[in-house]
Image 1 (cartoon, rainbow, N blue to C red):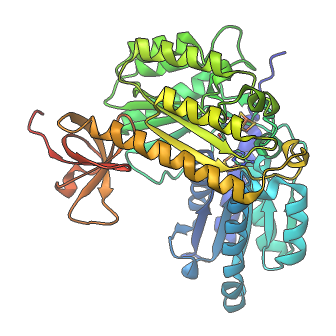
Image 2 (cartoon, helix red, strand yellow):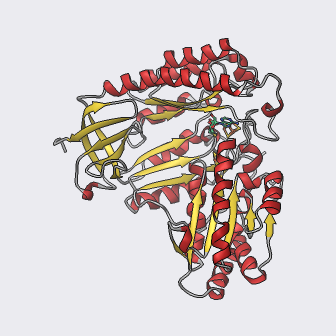
Length: 470
Ligand code: SAH
Ligand code: SF4
Ligand code: F3S
């Protein structure tokens, strides 16, 4: 059954009304500090929160100490992410003591869990309100209520399937790179993952909304537009008969403008040859594919509820490489899923050796309360997980180094992001394959595409100089 979860326009208009009310209630000159943990989806959400804050009269600041409003957008994907958000929240306690009118709010995936909501209510009395992911669009209304009543409130609808808010203001962090969520939530329930519990059911934005947003970004001179979803390959299934992610990508790739399209993340079970064909046909789509494998063992993949095996994964990879030999391929790996034996782990190493990823993002399995894997028998001891993790990295580092070294002498197109954080004589950017590239150049290149000849490479980055071919 098709369900369009786009919120009615009057619900959004009501929030604009509250934005006005907050602006009228507050003295002028207030500042807001928004802190984001987690994935790009959360960064995109924070840009909406920032947009709403600006519309309510707040000026954004990176300095929490000067803020009158602090919003902490949290992640729950691994324990480490939760602990970081909690520890940072703890550090704001003294700010509240110094500045009584300071409003501290928490939102996002961590606080969308009932047990976290309860513990914050009990142990973080200086947090004024929380709002779960499905309440994001009501931020102005909640903030207004908090300012007027000065009462603590905890907004969470456990089990809310979620919604699709359109037309909220957005304050983008960059003037040349943009996130565009094309769908929200997830239906896959991989047994280790908390995301489906905290982000609701899979729901797509209407294609005309996505196309209009991307068009506006391209017209405004954005150079890189990344389409976001937990599983972009199932875009449209809830809305359309026959219009899928590949169709959307093809529609976006023909929009006018000098921009590159990226997307993440793809679930291997739904990755289609049609998608590869669309990528190969359109120069505006970056030749880079992030395809999370998670494990090389079929037994573990099945316990993870991933719905593919090594063989089908490899068949997709060979199709991809046949159509786009230069396409970068990256992946996510979880080490130490419950029941993972030495043999299972070696199957993961073997996949890495076989596929030769350009880069991998690897994680120690972190049990998430409420997920199936958290209570599975045969949890792998921490020290075994860590030892395997090291072996995985050693292997991948060799592969990454070789792949990077193979680029020495080549000239790449690089989106220049800014000055290098470690060496301000250098600019830093990302190649089409998403590699970090450092080179000397003028500030005027920031936000633009440059041609860089690669002179040297290591595991993590390429070093080059501006090429004179453009
Ligand atoms: N929707 C995306 C992934 C979102 S989470 C997808 O399906 O590919 C990003 C990555 O975090 C996952 O790919 C997985 O490798 C990792 N991850 C998720 N839950 C985890 C857990 N409980 N422990 C360790 N890593 C986890
Ligand atoms: Fe989590 Fe799996 Fe959904 Fe990705 S596809 S968000 S790993 S449940
Ligand atoms: Fe993203 Fe973390 Fe939520 S990875 S979807 S912010 S749990």
